Length: 390
Image (cartoon, rainbow, N blue to C red; front, side, top):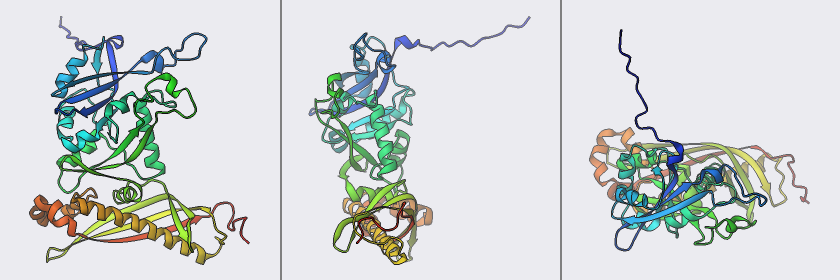
């Protein structure tokens, strides 16, 4: 008679014994200590339970707990003094790093800890808090998405898809760029109105006082945040990273500003490198874009091929200027957030071995960039001529 060995769930934990952490924020104190704020889900309120007769939740969908210390492991243990359940990080989908920490101390140590912890998912998204503490971001409630971390992630995905000025970055992607040569990371920043969005009453109005809003792109060099970009410069960075999905491009027309709008449907960015024998480096950026003419404020006839051709040229020039603005910014900061070094590495590995140690400071700022944009207007909507055309 054989003996059958059955493996049991020796490390299992019951759901009622767990505090499910949805997000974690890390701040830096004046004395150099870390302050960590965790956002813990209140399961009953997230599921939609409400107080009888009021239609309002008995308590917020999340609770926050804050502690300070000299390292993240110590802080995590100290938080247990305030929480009646075991802190469970396997469902954490958002990490918020304060602007102060990212600038003064850098983010390498924080993500070294998170990558080492087996509970943390490398797919969790990362954002930088701009002009706000990470703690403020953690405490701000949302009126549409019940869990605030979901609000930030969904906003980041929506603006990345519709506007093209922000990027969604995971822990895995961020660490890959931090440890590789020839490419530095950019991370989306978020801002909130301080101390005005922590209560249920603050979101029970059509225009809440405290809102979470995407701000710009944090630019990194050697693990530290060195600047932040917004507007067309941010768009140029996203164009060069080939991450623009949809966006709107406004163009001027015969003295009229923002006279017409090009609605991008799809695009493809290709970046190549030409390494000359003398050591000169020239990058070639080719962009093919397709979209629609979505708005016209002036009386022009879109049925005319000449008019469409002129609009395509104006859109091409606008996109080109946005890209050149991003290149100038990156070269001024001496940080290759555009990934040019990675392209050079693939093109000429032997040359890259000689250049990589001094790439950001010596070679990257002198790289010449040629930009070619090919825009095609596929549709003009339900009418060719504006109804207000004389």
